Length: 182
Image (cartoon, rainbow, N blue to C red; front, side):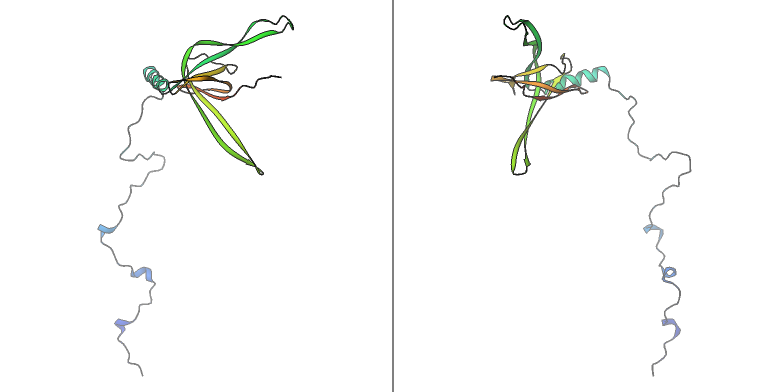
């Protein structure tokens, strides 16, 4: 027969939730202040708010000058003009004439390979940046004469596919012009 233990060693029949030891206040998480409904909550440490929404003219001028200084290529903007008529056909003769002087620009050429079935195709994307002070339309062409400050032996000419005014510069998507020769 088993000896009977005194009642002090018996397991209590209360749920374990009531047996949780009380921790000193030192180990408890600090309580956050309760928010009252309808009032905005503001944290104690807050970064300084900018009082104006737009940059000043001096800041814009300085940022545009810095953007222009980061353009390491040089290019000419070419515009289509009619120079006369062909005597044999009577059709107007069109030529691409430079508009203004050489301006700084930044032309970037990116290539990637795409796979279609078993064939691989090389896709080239050309984009550029020009200063906002340049008079530019989507019908113009860009002739790159220098890359990274070095003159090119043969200048590269591109058509403008897409023209977007950025905050500090013109953003252009370019492609090589298609020539119609025999």
